[in-house]
Length: 483
Image (cartoon, rainbow, N blue to C red; front, side, top):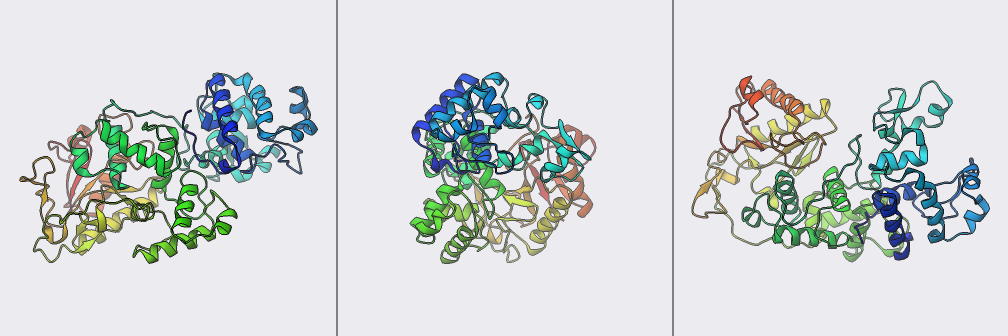
């Protein structure tokens, strides 16, 4: 059976219900997760066939209107008496008209909310001010421009999949064993950040989905109550995206439910507290997570950061002495794991490779703050800076050889280019996911803040404009040397 995302309320359904949803989705030529997310949202996360809107009278798993029920050969009264599994037959009957047309979450949800918008794209305007329809749905006008688009209308449904930031269609490239490319490289980085792979393991096949990557994905899936099929499918991608966006107060579905169960195991959340909101990150869950962070000497921010994740899920990181520290006393400030406008990647325990001078760390945080003011939708991703004291980096392929020799002064940082989908993941200039426009904006912002900066990056348009310098190996990251 394909993986199903842990949408809010999934604990209320049976295995038979899930299996039936998968079969229905297969017949409809759509993704079962789209149907699960819609039924979760429409039923108020209850998946109850009796769920009723007191104003409109809409009832059931997808909130059938009375007239719609009659057109389907049933009635609200009959729907209320059905089990959830029985009502799925009526759900399938309703969606049959849209078979083969629900290729995105937006299209699947429009089949319920506004059928005329199916296939129109996420920017299609549903309701515009002034109108009764807009007034009734004004809470969906996320950007406050007086119009409600398909993308905006579907955002709350999308949140149930752990996909909340982008306002464009959800498309999926399933990664599996045998595949190669920047997407696999990015997946490996994610597995390293969460502790399921080591950098040494990645070096044996960077960008290649082999048995080590497959095992890492399986372990992640198992820890997050996903079918451990070893493929990077929609549900697994949604879980990773949710972690990158920040699992915190207000988060729902996805990894929230397994996180809560780990907090119960850690004796920070009681079963009674869990029962008040399974799959929902509320105040009790926030307090429990902060308590766990305090007990484990982690920043008590109430967010499931990578470091908190590794500790809570008890993922053992390799114990080793590590390279010796250098003797540059000014290289002694660790960049926080995340902050306003930035995230980190390839982060070692205690930020061992993200140490810089005080001026450099302040500058990186300042750049991120300025970036957040113009692009709050996508943080900057900072990678390697230096080791404490300017200590050496050694090649994991050839341990006797120095690597990153230019990363010993505490003034140089690796920065990922911006992706079109805003994902906290790797990309490269030849990839369709690379966003040259916003990456150029980032380069210009850094130069505006620090005119004497030196940036190595191989985008030919940027090098032609003398904004960056080309250098071997710098097609997937910016090498930023601050003055």
